[in-house]
Length: 355
Image (tube, rainbow, N blue to C red):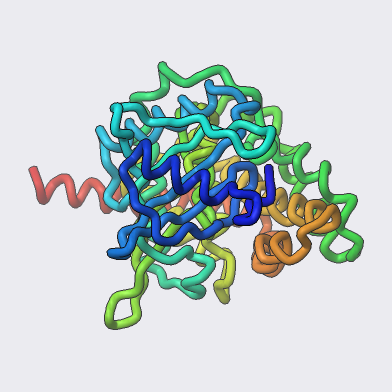
């Protein structure tokens, strides 16, 4: 990925492409963070904003077209919160190929999703976290029509179902003994359930409802609500419970009680969808392992370079991981089973009232 610099004309080239292909007169182009893509916020003189994503064409077109299909599916079956909408070009297309130096990139533009990341919002409340749980269930419902159309994809680093390998691939960078022990425990919990993963129900999921991809707004009284979801790059056909696992695990970040926050998300999810016995059994070890992947990965990437960005992505992870590791998986499983029963009874009552 190039270091986009005005002096090398990269920014001006992007601005020119946005004008020629989309009719957008860009007054300001601001660089945003991104793991693999090169992302920008484009703004015109009136303050209208768009999200601009440049993906190396060397990644292949199939993953890019899959991401576009996911976004279009959400246009057909919208969520209760905002998601990015692909902006059509003047010629009706949805992508352009631009050359930046010796490299070529696929340029796409989507609507700007308003809100602040949960990482910026800080402490949330029970209502917010239950809304997040309902959103995870809603996401599964909205993306379900893609189950027969998903592309063949290799498992990638962030997939919940391969968390054991991903934890260990970066744990060498964690020198602190206490933190290394947290990673080892999370990996061991994952190992204990890994053989049962193939039997889990499968579907297409966003699989990345973490604190930087979930956006929220605060009302006048200070209460927070989920306002949007961004970044569908990791959407994949995999274990359905991965959607809940990621959302619930990351909900504990920056909260005084990570496990209570986790349970709030489970409650919200179960108020809208059902969990199988196997999903109840595997939810906690999978979720804790996915959080450990975050800690392990950004520790390794920080060691390799860009320490400040890596630290910002994992600083809140360690305290939450420590809290969750302190909860016995069997206790967690029993609590989730109770939540399932409680919410099932509530669903029956609601159904009776609307009948």
